[in-house]
Amino acid sequence: MALAVTMIATLDPGLVQIVGLSLRVSLTAVAAATLIGLPLGAAVAALSFPGRRVVAILLNTLMGLPPVVVGLVVYLLLSRSGPFGVLGLLFTPTAMIVAQTVMIVPIVASLSRQTVEDLLVEYDDLLRVTGAGPFRRLATLLSEARWSLVTTVLAGFGRASAEVGAVMIVGGNIEHVTRVMTTAIALETSKGDLPMALALGLVLMTLSLAVNLAASLLKETGERA
Image (cartoon, rainbow, N blue to C red; front, side, top):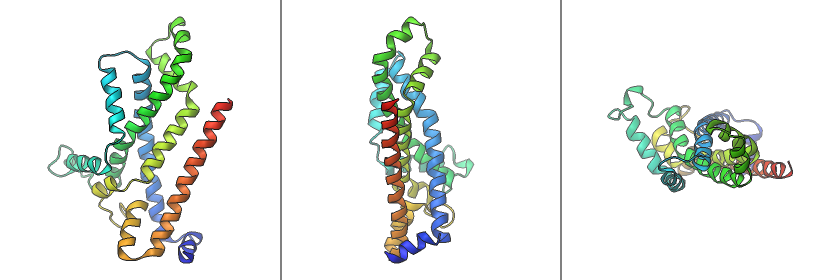
């Protein structure tokens, strides 16, 4: 444990590289999932269109999609024999971002749908009276629910940063290329390099604690606003 703490305190180059890549992959995936998931969830909650109920059920179902299944599907799509194999993205950080985005979109969309549905109880009559169109309707609801939606995004980030199965499949856990915190912990533990595994574990736990604390504080801020 002492050696693990020392590695963190002295900013061990190998540790910093792994943590930096992990953050880059997860933050990029969360940004992409947010751009897709928030409007999608709000649209399912606030707009009427054919198949709306089916989409809502599908989003809820995909929230529990096993990461290894996501990894397998993305692997098949990006492999040389797959439809996107020509892009050469397999075993790159981009492939890991794609896999994490696929996993996070249903989470962000489902949670934002529930948030907007709850808010719609209060704002539906007002939006109808003012004659708000679909885009204005969505923009208003997303704006009013911004604090709750920030916690939704943080939940997506927490899910992405702790994921191991999908990124292992599509990233390959290549040193200095696609090795992130979760896959490195699994590898270093199997190799018996416990100080590095513990150091990464401490960083990951600290990151998870910070995300949960931020979500709690933002929720309290939103409730007081």
